[in-house]
Structures are given as structure tokens and as C-alpha cells.
Length: 511
Image: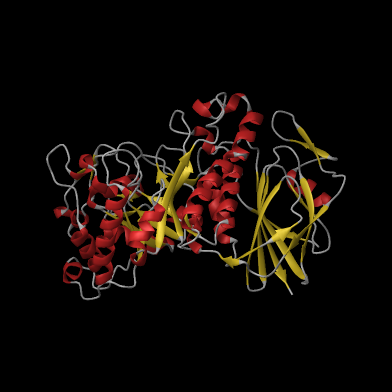
């Protein structure tokens, strides 16, 4: 059993006596009538994927200068501050594509820079320079230690508005072009890549076919998409049989996609962007009214994961009998408001996202690729990383703080447990002799105390990495950031107090 002593908690939080002030003069009490015991089963239940904390990079044109803002055009390289903050974020995978992939022709962004062809960014407006292409994306992934995931142009998802732009240029690409892209990246002998100055393969082992193909009108129907997925996957795997293919399966498409293309694919993809207050007509989360009622905002954010839980449950029901892994390649809150979702800069949103990441871990038997943010940008608050322009140091949003914390303190095998105390949302995992706990205190103003034990094993040492901040604090820059994990050594003999509105990664060394 382990404990952070009360005097240490008081010293660390700056509290005095038996209570402390947490925003708006509200107080919470330490003392509980009873202290429960969290019991951890040390036997791994299923394997957790390192790709549960991926990031999604898409050129978003004039809407949110994401990729272009991250690139230093003066010296033709990625911005140093973006590289450094992404290393801290530590994504297991980076995805290139999105809607942009429906009109992206990969050859326009390889080779000598002066010969690269700028393109109209049909969905997001503006001109994309194509100075950032395949090699640059793979270089970014290499620098930050992430596996690259590429989304191919799937005949513009069958949508005419992506297939030909306003200048009459053909933007659709077929299976042959996709297979040639795989060859360019992965074939050690590819002459085109070598001519462009890359003797060694760029090596992309995971590819996605189709982006939100079932969304909206004027796109492929389910059966057509499945048959074309066979065509694309077959051509791409003929070039490199070792690659993994992700096929689109959202909106009730999964079963038919698997029935037709199952032997050619390795993952089924779905996306989810949602408003946590969507069922509440008086939701203060919308339109930046959250500052008027912090308590109501907190309650909505703490329940936000439930909508996502229903989404995951639905797609699971479609694929459970097939046991094919799931890939959640786009996922985040999407809330109406100026600059899109300003509430997402608050620590309350960070705690809410921690519940979403715990949900992903609980579904890790099937969910093998997942994210909870768009990667980077200059404006939208659902980004993981904000890039100040024209200058300034890039910084992580609250969702990224949580993703970084979990990614750095997570085991390979998911563990089950019992005795989770009210107010805490906990997941557990294990790698060899270390057990990792992800603990979310869902109470805005109340601490929760619990004992921790591992069934039939002894805890030899314990430490915690805790983020605890005022739920109303909004991160606006890299300066004066309270959302920094604080490392604490814990006693192995007593209970632990988790502050209100906190997210903590605990590491237990077991004997």
C-alpha cells in the first residue's frame, strides 16, 4: 500500500489546514469517511498498442496554417521549436492526409523544390506550396520518433468536387498511382527516389485508403468503396506485401467492407468529432459561454466521454465477430465558438480528454490506432500543438499535455482492477516489473484518497507524475504554464491523495 502524506500534499499544493481554495473561493475537504482500496490484477488482459497516442497532420490552408506554419521556408526545414515540442509530446505515429488526400497528387511534392507544383487546397482554400512532401513528412517522423502513416488519394473518394478543381485540373488518383507511391517509399531499388537524392527507402509501413468516404453526398457507396479498396490494396501489397492497410468503415460500412475486402485489409477506420454538450440546449460550452458557469462547464466536460463511448461501442458491434483491429485516425471535440472551441485551452478540457484516453485504453483489445486531437496549427483550439506566428515558441494544448503524460508512462499489457473509488477514473497497464496507473480525479473541488495494492505481489517502490491546475486556467503561450507534470516519490505503506481536477500517472515497481 502507498500513501502521499497529508503534510506533503499541503506543502506541494500550498494548502493550509484541512482545506484549500480552488477557483471562485470554493473549498474542498481532504478527509473521507472511508478510504477504499484499489486492487490490481497483475496479469495482462490484452496488449496495448503504442499507436493509441498518434497525431494527425493535414495541410489546412488558410483555415489553420498547420503544416506551412511548422515549416521554416527560409532554411527549408522544420521549425526547431515545433520539433522540440513534438518530441516532448512523443506521438507513436503521425498520419498525413485527411480531406486533403482526396486531391493530393504525391509526385507534385517530391524532387527538386524549384520544380514542385503548388496546388489549390480545395477544401481549406489557399495555395499549398508542396515544399513539404513525402520525404519531408518522413523526416519529421524520424526526428520525433514516430511511425509514419500515409493516406492515399482514393479516386477522390468518388466525389466530383475533389476530382477536378475550379481550374479544370484532374486531382483524382487511381490504384496505380497509389502503388507507385508505395514503391517510391519502400522499394530499395526505386530509381525515381534515388534520382531525387534519397538512396535509402523512406519506409512507410501503414497506409490508409479512403478518408471519411461515407460522409456526405456524392461519394462512393459502401459496396463500390469496398470493391475499390480491394483494387487499391491488392496493387499496393503487390509492390510491398509487408505493408498494413487501413480501410474506411464508419457510418455502418464496416461489415460490408470486411465481407468484401477483409483478406486485403488490416484495420478498419472510423472518425469522431463531437460536441460534449450536444444534448444540452443550454450548454455553456458552446459559443464560449463556459466562462460564465465553470461548474456547469465542468459537468458537461466530465461526461463528454460518454458520447464517444457510444460511438466506439457501435463500431465494435460491427467488427467484434471479425476481430479486425480498429483505427480511430481522427478524433477530437468540435465545439462551436470563435477560433473554434476556446474552452479546449482550459485545464478542465485536459481532464476531460484524460477520460477519453482512458476509454481508448479500455477498448485497446480492438482499438489499436487512435488520437484525440488534430496535430498542430495557428488557430483552432482542437490542435495538440499551437504554433505562434509570425514568431514565438510552440506549446502544447491541454489535450497534448495528457497525451504526452500517458505516452511516457504506459505499459504494454492492459490490467484489470477492482475497488475503484468514487470520483476517480483509472486504467492500469504493465511492462515487466512496472505497473502504470492513469488516474483522473473527476471532482472539480474535492480530493480523493485511496489505498493501492497489487494482488499477490509486493510494491517495492512508487512514484507519481501529477498535473494539477485550476480547471479554469487557459493556456495561451509557452510561458507561465502550470500544466507541467510534477514528479513525487510515494510511500509504499500508506494511501495516496489525488487533488481535485488532477491527472496523474503512477508507476509501481513490483516484486
